[in-house]
Amino acid sequence: MITKSMKSVDLKATVRRMTLNLRAVNRIVQTDDFTDLWEKSHDRESVIQYIKDINIIALRNWIHDSLDLRDMSYRQLIALCQKHHVTNYSRMQKEEMVKALGEIYGRRS
Image (cartoon, rainbow, N blue to C red; front, side):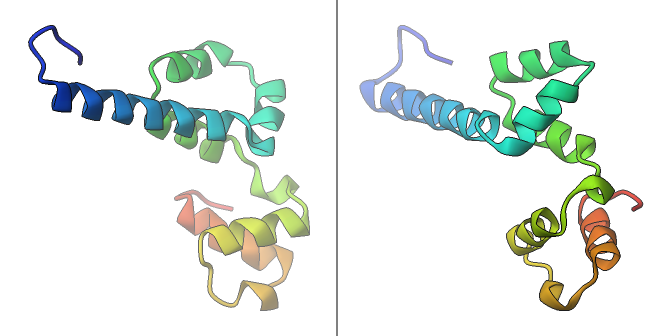
């Protein structure tokens, strides 16, 4: 929080942190996953509040909780496996990738 009594160094650090967090929210909102889920969402009020509060963790959790891995294409699953460093993903069938990613996201596939 910014106060009148802050030193300039502290003010700069706070503004930098706020800016980086806002950029992180922007990167999330610009993704294809966000766009797809936003169009399908029935609970937009929560998502809007996450964005207003710059709550990056809640926003990421909403995306991960809303993704239905079984409906994703093979290429989308490969991209997620790469992102999460799933070992031997290139040798896996689609259902194996869904299972591996489900374990990462902490839910049953």
